[in-house]
Image (cartoon, rainbow, N blue to C red; front, side):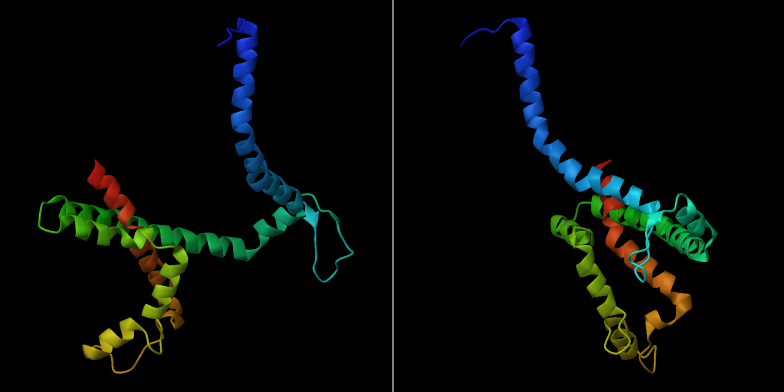
Length: 187
């Protein structure tokens, strides 16, 4: 092995480091930085699908229209309500599950694996599962409540506006409670 002078070794180390980082930086640029900057630039442009030839720089008009509109504030309100409903439930359910799964009992590993499943499932699968559970015509929740005699006819659960946030929050809690459970178990 040939010994390089200190200056040559530094250059070789820098070249190796940049060679290792180059693919990651290229992918980050292509899939993160460029789309983010392009989206930011587009947000300052006037675009109308009905008038494709009419374009131009709109400055802060798009942002002012967004802040003056009611859709943003209604969406933020619903998002904050979901957070307010789910955060305490996530922490309480995660703590209870961690306390139960911390105690030694036969089959604890299997039960822990089953408890983590909702978190491991892709969001699309969870969405389909909850749409099946809450379906007004053949849903599992309706079937269970009907068999127990708690309802006389099937209900369209997602059709009741007052209950929609509750169902979304419940589905979110069910899919996310394993994370706080794992954090508490690991502590």
